[in-house]
Length: 478
Image 1 (cartoon, rainbow, N blue to C red):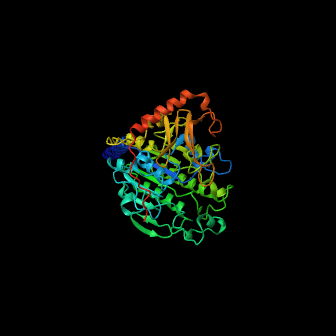
Image 2 (image 1 turned 90 degrees about the vertical axis):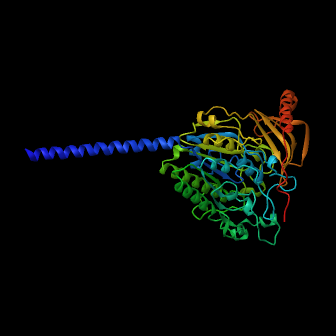
Image 3 (image 1 turned 135 degrees about the vertical axis):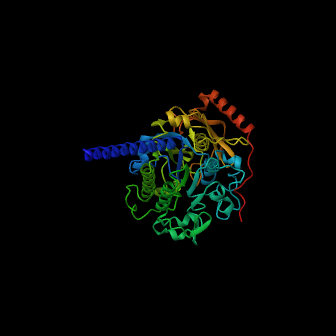
């Protein structure tokens, strides 16, 4: 009898221990879930270089396969009217990171459209970057890839709010070592090799490789992004992954060479897409996908003079360097299982809106000592409703060339680039297009809608009445 009592007592202890363990585990899981839900969302921006509006599968390309970006568009939001603030690299990147038109910061110029290896200046220290915003509330921040906002140490990412930097300081076609002229060099594309471009690869502020091996650079950028996510999964983080491709020269890892029906350009885009897939997988495996917002877009439209080594703007007119739609409307997708409601958004958005939207989502007050041009898109992301943005200003250098208000776009000045799409021409009255009906900008309807032109001109007067043009940061060179 005593032995039976001891057995019953022992079983009771085991049972109570199991109940206690289950209770503790449940409490810990609830605590972890609560901590995760209360934590500010993580942000990942993947920024391509010179990618055309028509270069992704989900945006209509018939042979470039982008299954991971297509997945983001289906599970998240596909934005069909999303814009950059400039049609070339430097001012476009400045606008994304500051939420401001580059004309305000001086990161645009009539003398030099972008920064070069012999440029003296860069992004002014007075500007507040998205990384600086997020670090105010404890975010870990990383810039990976192409910077192009100043190559001198004081202008690098680590002096602009980023804890970590791994990338190249300007475009991958710069520091070209050749006796030929720039355009002549590109005639023999089979002879192009990565060693011809003496571009430095930098970790934080130290050059670790020169010339950078561009054959493997896309792969390494994606790996760096995944590593940073894994290392900072227990705290809020911001990753700005700015690929330097598919800007020419085109290079891809050995695993991707010859795999796309679109040739080398397609190989490059498909490797970028593969890296996006690695990021999504890492977020899911670490259990933080629900709490992370990922956005993919490009800095400007395709560099069309390079033929099959350049991209496609799809049905949009012109490309990089211009203020036509092909130069500044970009393929854009947002993804987050926890924050983004699946939808196709055809209302307006801008890369400048990322500064405002992510600041609001992270609970960081916007700077109140300057004009911020970004609009808060968080309600649209979360509910799939129409965007609050009503207009787009198309600047080329410090000049306003065109304005979009709702469906209508007025061109006050048109100008091609790289020997294509015509010389500079001023228009009075402006050309007017309904971009919902005519996204290719083929049918001028100015005579039929003088009232629309008046509305746009009122918007321009309001904008210019408050505009203070920043000191030119691009013109001065060594």
